[in-house]
Image 1: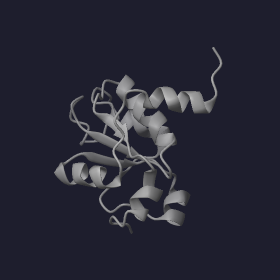
Image 2: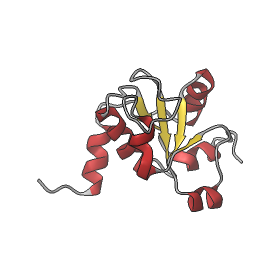
Image 3: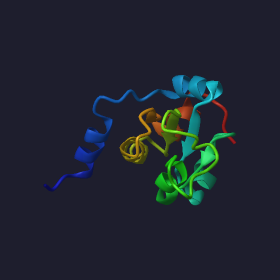
Image 4: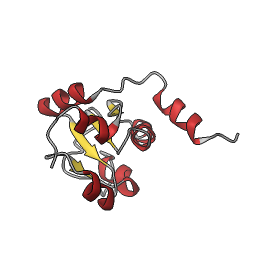
Length: 125
């Protein structure tokens, strides 16, 4: 079956709650992992979220798989809450869907991405 990228994003978002900036910020303050998957050049151009984990997209699954040998210390189990962010909230939807396939059932992404976060006046660097 051939799909368009728009169809992939639609399927990735189906039935998933995607928090907006304020809700994501509150979840982050409660201990959710806020994971920035943007490439270094994009972060340099747009800015960053202080305290967010930077895990570029090409290694995301390896770093957050709780059963993986290349996981980060924060990947303590399948129960962790993960909010993925990209620039505008498209690539992050696909990334969060991939994490859910690894069993991270509380993985989602920031609706509107970093652009929405910054527009909401939340902390940036």
